[in-house]
Image (tube, rainbow, N blue to C red; front, side):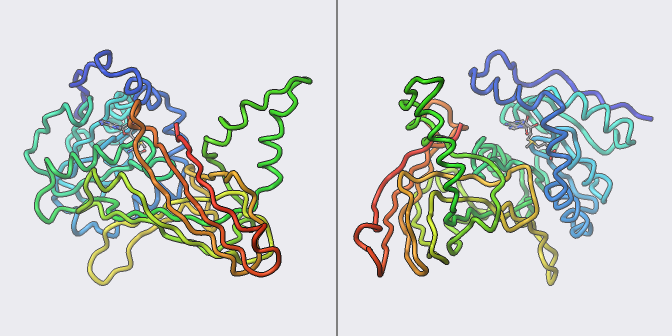
Length: 348
Ligand SMILES: C[S@@+](CC[C@H](N)C(=O)[O-])C[C@H]1O[C@@H](n2cnc3c(N)ncnc32)[C@H](O)[C@@H]1O
């Protein structure tokens, strides 16, 4: 059996900013990889997409950006790739080396440790890039920046990126009970007024599973990215949204999620998955933004506005998200029920 050795890191971790060190440390432990591997929607979508495209993978050079335990590299090698290069900055790549070796792929997979941006690949160009880079609200973690860097530097003309399409979606959510419980807690903490915490709690989006029955408006796709052409600038966005109430209820917040699509051979239906409340569980769950107002809605009332997402200045892996909204109630007590507001959030 040939051996897989992971050489010394091309990046000196201690030279990275604290936030970067912290980010890569978070992938050192096996627990986070266990969670990702056990997310069958995620992992099987990658495997199915590779199998669906095995004619394209045959004899190709593949780059796995952020290989973690090497699972995507091994899928690619197993299904025809000529050679796979897996790159990761975290120490988990040491384990990937052992896994590649004991599973018999040492001569097909090369593992390189370091930040992809600091590494010189053994091939000047690659035919395919595979990467699982998605974070909460799709863009949290900013790992897509690295995939775009790899695309621009290494991908051959006509090469494929797995996945290559993604979109963010929004809808309204009734969540009175949990919202009240979460905020009211700070009104009386062991008999003391802790209410100054409330604005801080409101600023944090919540990542959790949402019962689809609590989604009470139409859905709106607010943005989509084609990884073949998207640029870093496109990832900073301000887009309108418009959703329509489906029942007499309260809209206490907005639920957001993302959808993913892989390239498909001509004439074949693409492998896709959704992280929405209507879809099977994924470890990304959904991201909820509580609104300052609890909007009392009737069927057909319109909630529209603008969602802005900008990488945080201090740590560009965090996101500053602003939601401006105007709720236009119609019919009974429409003036009292109509609201206009602006909330800012930080995802960190
Ligand atoms: C979401 S995990 C995916 C792991 C694996 N591909 C899988 O599907 O299970 C992302 C991995 O990318 C690595 N990573 C993120 N940015 C990187 C960069 N700029 N250079 C090298 N590795 C990076 C992280 O250390 C982490 O292990």
